[in-house]
Amino acid sequence: MASNFSLKTFAVLALALFAFCLQATLGEITCENLDQDTCAYAVSSTSKRCVLEKHVKRSGEEEYTCRTSEIEADKIKNWIETDQCVKACGLDRKSFGISSDSLLESRFTEMLCSPQCYNSCLNVVDLYFNLAVGEGKI
Image 1: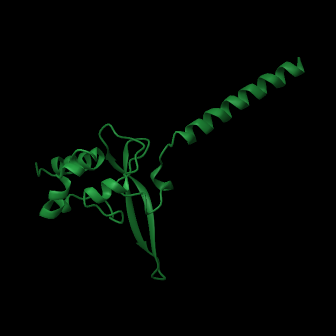
Image 2: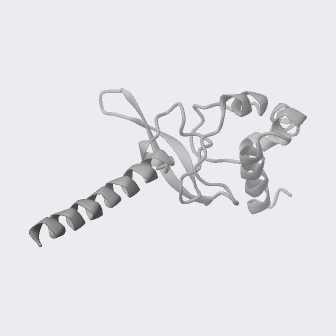
Image 3: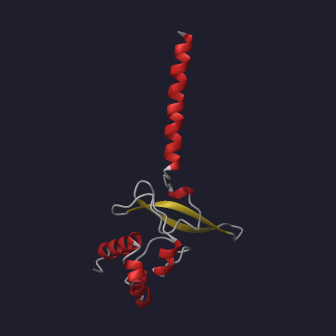
């Protein structure tokens, strides 16, 4: 009986460990765990967009943190934008916060609407489209 109990306990623990490892392997993205080189334009496992923030310490040293915003991505989750899309869409990995201000720059909108960006970088297009709609620019 004791042997049967320990075998069941072992099976339950092994199953729990497997489930934990599977979740980690599947890449659940938490914004607060991202570094400054992957934060901007990322989407968490809960479909919330990640934002890069800069804080200046009393010593004058700059510190970058990634946090979860309240802005939800449409049908996108667990996504870190590729370097190819960042380049094709004219983005900057070091951009802070989320703003539609860049839509006022003709060079940016040209790159956003280019076939390389518009047809291949749905996360970026979704972000800026929803920002424009939310601010009444469309």
